[in-house]
Length: 133
Image (cartoon, rainbow, N blue to C red; front, side):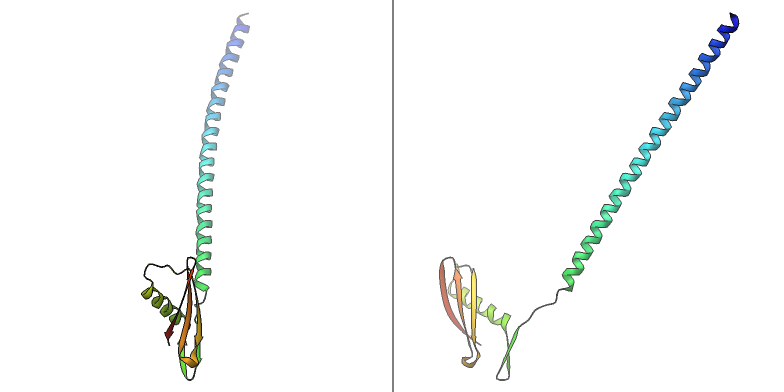
Protein backbone atom coordinates (compact mmCIF):
# COMPACT_ATOMS: atom_id res chain seq x y z
CA UNK A 1 0.00 0.00 0.00
CA UNK A 2 2.88 2.27 0.55
CA UNK A 3 3.57 2.08 -3.13
CA UNK A 4 0.01 3.00 -3.96
CA UNK A 5 0.16 6.07 -1.72
CA UNK A 6 3.47 7.05 -3.26
CA UNK A 7 2.09 6.66 -6.77
CA UNK A 8 -1.05 8.62 -5.80
CA UNK A 9 1.08 11.45 -4.40
CA UNK A 10 3.23 11.50 -7.55
CA UNK A 11 0.07 11.62 -9.65
CA UNK A 12 -1.27 14.52 -7.53
CA UNK A 13 2.04 16.36 -7.80
CA UNK A 14 2.19 15.79 -11.55
CA UNK A 15 -1.45 16.87 -11.94
CA UNK A 16 -0.79 20.01 -9.89
CA UNK A 17 2.26 20.84 -12.04
CA UNK A 18 0.30 20.23 -15.23
CA UNK A 19 -2.60 22.37 -13.96
CA UNK A 20 -0.16 25.17 -13.04
CA UNK A 21 1.49 24.96 -16.46
CA UNK A 22 -1.94 24.98 -18.12
CA UNK A 23 -2.92 28.13 -16.20
CA UNK A 24 0.36 29.81 -17.16
CA UNK A 25 -0.09 28.82 -20.80
CA UNK A 26 -3.70 30.03 -20.73
CA UNK A 27 -2.62 33.36 -19.20
CA UNK A 28 0.07 33.77 -21.84
CA UNK A 29 -2.41 32.89 -24.58
CA UNK A 30 -4.91 35.40 -23.22
CA UNK A 31 -2.25 38.11 -23.03
CA UNK A 32 -1.11 37.31 -26.57
CA UNK A 33 -4.72 37.41 -27.78
CA UNK A 34 -5.25 40.80 -26.12
CA UNK A 35 -2.05 42.13 -27.67
CA UNK A 36 -3.08 40.84 -31.08
CA UNK A 37 -6.55 42.36 -30.71
CA UNK A 38 -5.04 45.72 -29.71
CA UNK A 39 -2.68 45.63 -32.68
CA UNK A 40 -5.56 44.73 -35.00
CA UNK A 41 -7.68 47.58 -33.63
CA UNK A 42 -4.81 50.04 -34.06
CA UNK A 43 -4.19 48.84 -37.60
CA UNK A 44 -7.90 49.19 -38.42
CA UNK A 45 -7.96 52.75 -37.05
CA UNK A 46 -4.88 53.66 -39.11
CA UNK A 47 -6.45 52.14 -42.23
CA UNK A 48 -9.68 54.06 -41.60
CA UNK A 49 -7.79 57.32 -41.11
CA UNK A 50 -5.77 56.71 -44.26
CA UNK A 51 -8.94 55.98 -46.22
CA UNK A 52 -10.58 59.18 -44.94
CA UNK A 53 -7.51 61.24 -45.84
CA UNK A 54 -7.42 59.72 -49.31
CA UNK A 55 -11.12 60.42 -49.82
CA UNK A 56 -10.64 64.00 -48.63
CA UNK A 57 -7.71 64.51 -50.99
CA UNK A 58 -9.72 63.10 -53.90
CA UNK A 59 -12.65 65.38 -53.07
CA UNK A 60 -10.30 68.37 -52.85
CA UNK A 61 -8.74 67.42 -56.18
CA UNK A 62 -12.20 67.32 -57.76
CA UNK A 63 -13.00 70.75 -56.35
CA UNK A 64 -9.76 72.19 -57.68
CA UNK A 65 -10.37 70.72 -61.11
CA UNK A 66 -13.58 72.75 -61.64
CA UNK A 67 -12.90 75.59 -64.09
CA UNK A 68 -13.84 79.18 -63.45
CA UNK A 69 -16.75 80.56 -65.44
CA UNK A 70 -16.96 83.94 -67.10
CA UNK A 71 -19.38 85.36 -69.66
CA UNK A 72 -18.37 88.37 -71.73
CA UNK A 73 -20.63 90.14 -74.22
CA UNK A 74 -18.87 91.72 -77.19
CA UNK A 75 -20.79 94.41 -79.02
CA UNK A 76 -19.62 97.24 -81.28
CA UNK A 77 -15.99 96.64 -80.38
CA UNK A 78 -16.56 96.71 -76.61
CA UNK A 79 -16.47 93.97 -73.98
CA UNK A 80 -19.05 93.77 -71.19
CA UNK A 81 -18.54 91.31 -68.31
CA UNK A 82 -21.88 89.87 -67.33
CA UNK A 83 -20.89 89.22 -63.70
CA UNK A 84 -19.92 92.88 -63.31
CA UNK A 85 -23.22 94.03 -64.81
CA UNK A 86 -25.21 91.80 -62.43
CA UNK A 87 -23.24 93.16 -59.44
CA UNK A 88 -23.86 96.75 -60.60
CA UNK A 89 -27.59 95.96 -60.86
CA UNK A 90 -27.61 94.55 -57.31
CA UNK A 91 -25.72 97.59 -56.03
CA UNK A 92 -28.17 99.96 -57.77
CA UNK A 93 -31.10 98.11 -56.18
CA UNK A 94 -29.45 98.20 -52.74
CA UNK A 95 -28.77 101.94 -53.09
CA UNK A 96 -32.50 102.55 -53.52
CA UNK A 97 -33.77 99.80 -51.19
CA UNK A 98 -31.30 99.48 -48.32
CA UNK A 99 -33.39 97.17 -46.14
CA UNK A 100 -34.64 94.84 -48.85
CA UNK A 101 -33.03 91.46 -49.55
CA UNK A 102 -32.43 90.27 -53.10
CA UNK A 103 -34.24 86.94 -53.49
CA UNK A 104 -33.99 86.81 -57.28
CA UNK A 105 -32.56 89.07 -59.95
CA UNK A 106 -32.98 89.03 -63.71
CA UNK A 107 -30.86 91.26 -65.92
CA UNK A 108 -31.80 92.12 -69.50
CA UNK A 109 -29.01 93.53 -71.66
CA UNK A 110 -29.59 96.02 -74.46
CA UNK A 111 -26.12 96.84 -75.72
CA UNK A 112 -27.53 98.99 -78.54
CA UNK A 113 -28.99 101.28 -75.84
CA UNK A 114 -25.83 100.84 -73.70
CA UNK A 115 -28.15 99.84 -70.85
CA UNK A 116 -29.06 96.91 -68.68
CA UNK A 117 -32.53 96.55 -67.21
CA UNK A 118 -33.09 94.53 -64.06
CA UNK A 119 -36.00 93.07 -62.16
CA UNK A 120 -35.41 92.16 -58.51
CA UNK A 121 -37.74 90.01 -56.50
CA UNK A 122 -37.62 90.77 -52.78
CA UNK A 123 -40.15 88.88 -50.72
CA UNK A 124 -43.38 89.10 -52.62
CA UNK A 125 -42.53 92.43 -54.25
CA UNK A 126 -40.78 93.12 -57.55
CA UNK A 127 -38.65 96.13 -58.34
CA UNK A 128 -37.39 97.23 -61.75
CA UNK A 129 -34.53 99.50 -62.64
CA UNK A 130 -31.95 100.45 -65.23
CA UNK A 131 -28.17 100.92 -65.22
CA UNK A 132 -25.84 102.27 -67.87
CA UNK A 133 -23.20 100.06 -69.38
